[in-house]
Image 1 (cartoon, rainbow, N blue to C red):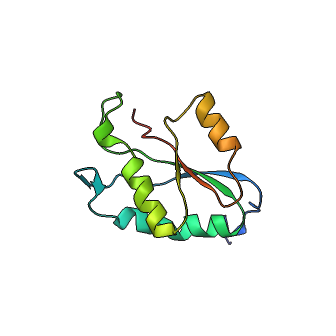
Image 2 (cartoon, rainbow, N blue to C red):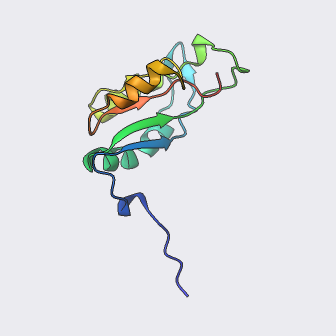
Length: 121
C-alpha cells in the first residue's frame, strides 16, 4: 500500500494566488532581524512558487503582542530581510484583513510577494 503525499511541487499554481503560512517568528534586535535562520528555511518554497508563476501572500506571527498592534513586533523588518535574501521586492501589508489588504492581494503580479502584518495583532 502506497501513501502518496501531495507536494507543492505537484500543484498547478501558475497565475494563482497562494497563501503560505511561514514561521517568521524570529528574534529582533533594535528593529532588525537578529537571526534569519527561519526566513532562510522558507526560501526554497517561496522561490519555487515564484518561479512557477504564483503570486504569494505570506502569513506569520511574531512574538506575543497580546492582541494589540505593537510596532516593536511588526513584521516589517522581516519583510525587509526577506527582500534582501530574495533579491526582489516584498510588499508589506498594513494588516491581515480589510479592504486595503484585499486590494494588495488582488494587485499582485505573478512572482509577487506580499507579507501580511503580524497575525497576532
